[in-house]
Image 1: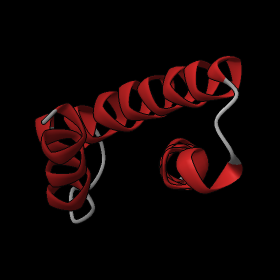
Image 2: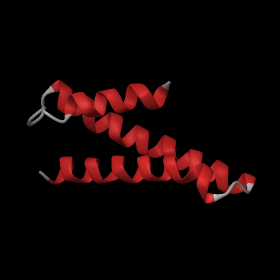
Image 3: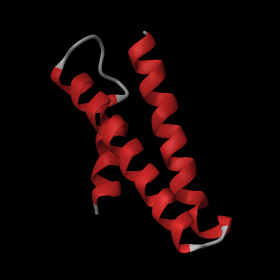
Length: 74
């Protein structure tokens, strides 16, 4: 559920400019989604799950990190 809400806020905030409330929510959602997915990957690796099981979380974490870096660089 958290992933869905975070993804929705990321998509909604892509059109936001500057330091509007929606842009700030987008940055916070991207950071929290990145941390959440990184923790999910760590938990999966510790359990010994294969790449097939934690690849979606890893890719979502990397995409959120890229979006956050582009947003903060602009």
